[in-house]
Length: 223
Image 1 (cartoon, rainbow, N blue to C red):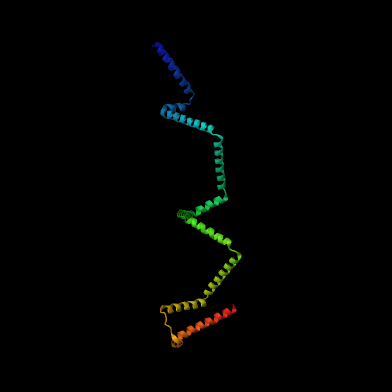
Image 2 (cartoon, rainbow, N blue to C red; image 1 turned 45 degrees about the horizontal axis):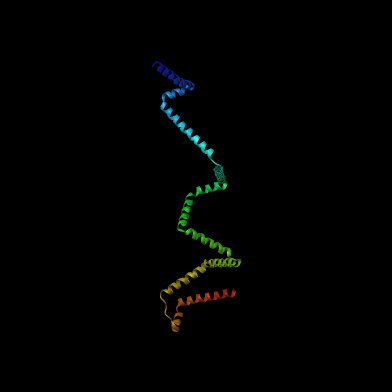
């Protein structure tokens, strides 16, 4: 028993000697923290072991990467760098600023395009645009000249119709046509025409038509 106690004492002495040496190397603050919160210290050591295992696993995975994987990662990094350089331009900044200022309109436009795409209408619109582009490209100089002349003539007609006298005369003629169309007239015959010619309204209308006929004849003669 004495030998066992002596051995146990010596063993315990040796076991306690090592921590004593270790504790002697620790600062007093660390010793106090270990004494006050031993469970927290144990949890920290466990977490530290997990972190070391993770670092070891990362080192092993890095060492196991072949050349192709390294090249792919390098290419990916290069692409990301190029993308970043592409975004760091005045044009991209201006685009971002414009998108921010018109965010609502831009969102509505995107929604409209999405609906057109889902319904298939966008393809029809693009096909129509391509057709119009082809037709425009196929127009020769003569066709363009004719269209330009037609547009000019239509503009001249619009200017003429906007004249006060012309507009008033056209309004009178249109009103007369509307009144005459309410009740279709009967054929007057020769005597009916003679009686109608005595009507002051008919005489005024005939005078107007004769004036129009004279002016039309003069214009045709000038052309």
